[in-house]
Amino acid sequence: MTAAELHLVVPGSLAQNTGGYLYDARIVNELRQRAWRVTVHNLEGAFPVVDNQARASITQTLEACPDGARVVIDGLALAGFADLADTHSSRLRILGLIHHPLAEETGLADQTRQQLATREREALTACRGVVVTSAFTAKQMDTYGVPTSSVRVVSPGNDPARLAQGPSCGDPPSLLCVASVIPRKGHEVLIHALARLREILWTCVCVGSLTRAPTYAALVQEQARTNGLSGRICFPGECSTDVVNDFYHTSSVFVLPSHYEGYGLVLVEAMARGLPIVSTTAGAIPSTVPPDTGMLVEPGNPELLAGALGALLAGEAGQVRRNMIGAAARRHASSLPSWDQAGRVFAAAILELAPDES
Image (cartoon, rainbow, N blue to C red; front, side, top):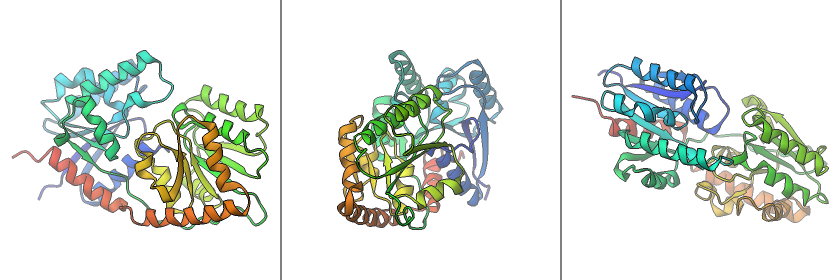
């Protein structure tokens, strides 16, 4: 039997520390474990608002794919595909891979948001099918003109992880946020929330790229300084997997103040380590974080976020809550599919949406 083949088209290197890229890389690995022949095409140029280099790169990439090839285009690159749909949608078996709709990114100008929504809709309706990472995102596909029959949900897998031990004896509780410092992740809300909790002992580590939105990242760090929190909050930037794992291991609470998430892979990573979650009700987060595994508040509300954090940080009662919620989080994470299972579901979805041609 001939091995199944797949071309995956992604902006830039697959080795980037974001949930979307980590998902793509793990799925590629799982498919290859199943003897799929996967070719990863790394696009050059700017995405999702494409520049001339990006247009040329995606054009050359699709032209190089042989007739009838299965081509999965990551959602970040889909806006660049819109202009090429007429040329390639009948020649290639093109599928979209959506982590979250492009227009849901926080901080976009209205014109840019509308442009991205329009172009993503044009691209998606030209695809033979779409794979999404959550049921929440699947429901959104209807607004983009994608019929339910053409959508498959393949949630991320989960890795077993050692139980977090928390900070050293005598040290205050430690908060951990793992997210690129970009507007959608809501770091500015976290700073204003923590400014309300000066009287409680805590420290906070915000792990994630400071270069994807440098102006915003600088603003967030300045807000920390202005609020007198520089000595309690650190921004180590993007870190290796081993370093991130060490931060998880020495943390007490995981916080993700996002304005929107299409799934929230880091939330599952934190739950697998027995960390209680403080996050928001934005996007797919309520589906990812069951009620007994964390405390979710309205996005963009520092007062409510401070209340949830304070309930887990203050005194012995806070520690009791952390232990109870953290244990529930770890139990839930242990019930989630493995990456092996996610790879199996992804492979089946691709074969259903783009079956072998007779």
